Length: 155
Ligand code: ATP
Ligand code: MG
Image 1 (cartoon, helix red, strand yellow):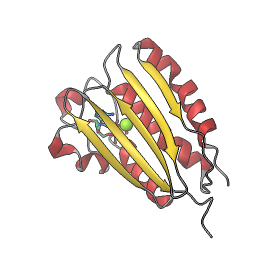
Image 2: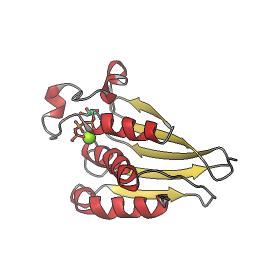
Image 3: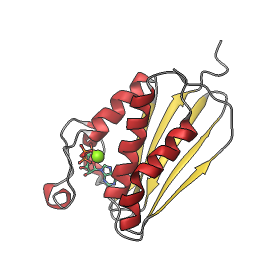
Image 4: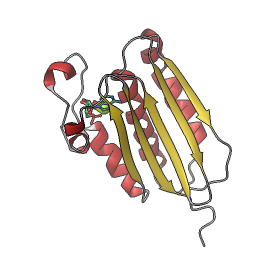
């Protein structure tokens, strides 16, 4: 099944519109035009993007921003979801990908969740032979970067 990433990003944006509008979050995309090809489960891919973006909106205060960036080259496809939200403490950066892990209950109780989102995201990224990285500064914001091989030019 071929995956149209731009289309999926558009659907995710539409899906999250009520959520980010109610917080007056500037949710924007920065999409490069390049040739790519990925094959895999389209619904899983949609879920991965939705999870990353809904986290970005959930863990960002009113009037913040969320940016989805898509770029890549002959080797790889890079999808970045960046926010200027509450950020993640250094000691939690590895653990957030574990099932049911949520950063400190006092800050998380204001926001509902099961702690499964990122475990699913990681599983899906790996199903595409990809990797996920997180950059985050507490109180400043976070960026989740997904890197997936571009099969377009692979023999
Ligand atoms: P669920 O996704 O299952 O509804 P959740 O959002 O709590 O629940 P994850 O998506 O797995 O679970 O995220 C794990 C934890 O990582 C979150 O509870 C939150 O503390 C932290 N986190 C995830 N994304 C961000 C982000 N963009 N900014 C700040 N903290 C984040
Ligand atoms: Mg989540």
